[in-house]
Image 1 (cartoon, rainbow, N blue to C red):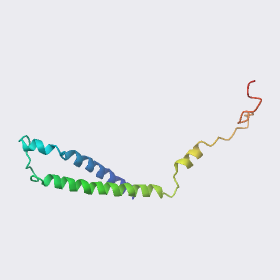
Image 2 (cartoon, helix red, strand yellow; image 1 turned 90 degrees about the vertical axis):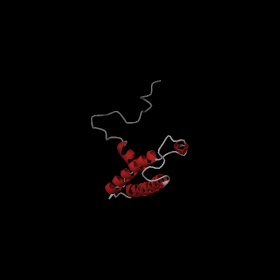
Image 3 (cartoon, rainbow, N blue to C red; image 1 turned 180 degrees about the vertical axis):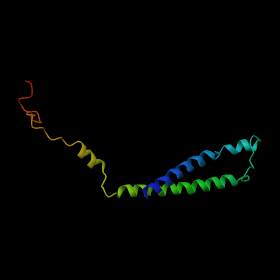
Image 4 (cartoon, rainbow, N blue to C red; image 1 turned 120 degrees about the vertical axis):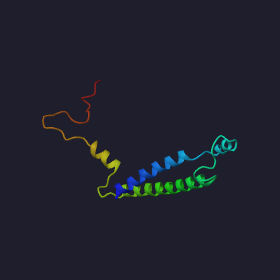
Length: 113
């Protein structure tokens, strides 16, 4: 389930990036007014902005929902994955071997005077 949600999340993020890059800025209409661009193209005069903004809104909603779903799925894992638990387990002191006679903590004898 997590793999499917992750794949949908990646596809939605790539789609949002692509649609945002395709959209014109607010100042782009000024150039079209003076004849430097074709304002009535594939979707008509204002059809492309409506289509692109709606598609972007839908993909952003999908991205938001998949983000929440991934956070929920990662928080409810059965193994209890935790950064703090993993850090405590990996930094725990190793057991001393029998041949090592030196204590783990420095004593008064170890401190130079």
